[in-house]
Amino acid sequence: MKYIAIVTGASSGIGREFAYAIDQSMNGIDEIWIVARRKDRLEELSAQLKHHARIVCGDLSSRNTVNRISQLLNADKYKIRFLVNAAGYGVLGDFEKGDRKEESGMCDLNVRALTEVTHVCLPHMGKNSRIINLASSAAFVPQPAFAVYAASKSYVLSFSRALNSELKDRQIYVTAVCPGPVKTEFFDVAEKHGTRTLSLKKFAMTTPQVVVKEALRDSYAKKEISVPTTVMKLFRVMCKIVPHRIIIALTSGLYK
Ligand SMILES: NC(=O)c1ccc[n+]([C@@H]2O[C@H](COP(=O)([O-])OP(=O)(O)OC[C@H]3O[C@@H](n4cnc5c(N)ncnc54)[C@H](OP(=O)(O)O)[C@@H]3O)[C@@H](O)[C@H]2O)c1
Image (cartoon, rainbow, N blue to C red; front, side):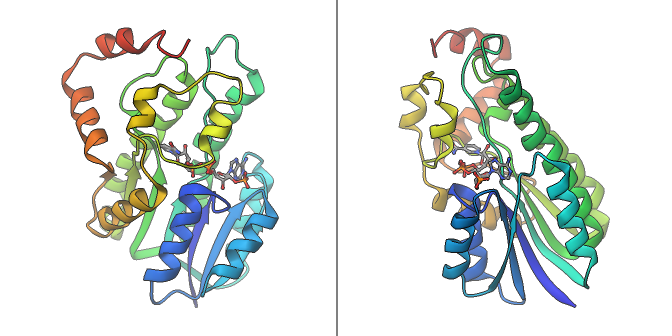
């Protein structure tokens, strides 16, 4: 039996930081599987890890990549101790003016791929294993000019909480991580059409290290939601008490 951790979106940002942190802190795993499209980045990461890394290079929006993960898992006796679903992207801009493929691509990757990867991994998970899903603080309230992304992350948050409850009896714990802005390549993609992120958001910016440290702590503590930084914790409370129509009215138009 081989004990493994799987990290999607491992070629950059938060996913890569999870791979480093799991590599450093986890005893009792034999391999870390790192998944993304950019092979050179995964090779670079693999060379830096002390655990053996298995590179799974592919586009997760395509079912072929998820099928490949499933086949690899079924080819030997694997037990997954940690699954981190970090692959994801968002593109800012008005929905109607946006690129149809890019918009549905967010649903394919952030929603469908995350769901399918989780589904193929679950039969290989047992007592005391963990799933960490990257949602976002965008999950807390609808976001004009980030409509599809925010909706996709609401799905991740809702799905993760329900799954955490379903899996309690099997002692598998699911944590949805809901950061605000994090300094990664995410914004190179999000702002590619020129729509700028709010300067207020940039003020709240944190690092992947902070997000991952708190996420792992919350996951070990069996928390279903991890919200790094005080600013975003306050934002979450605000989204619980202020009617969403008011927050939406206040934020709509700010990106133009
Ligand atoms: N940065 C933020 O402000 C922020 C805030 C809240 C939540 N999040 C969420 O955190 C997660 C990680 O984001 P990040 O900030 O680390 O962004 P990032 O640096 O852009 O990393 C995104 C990762 O996803 C992978 N990826 C993208 N498209 C893919 C595809 N079609 N198939 C397979 N892998 C793909 C990328 O690898 P390749 O390009 O090599 O495929 C990369 O490893 C995302 O789910 C994001 O929505 C980010």
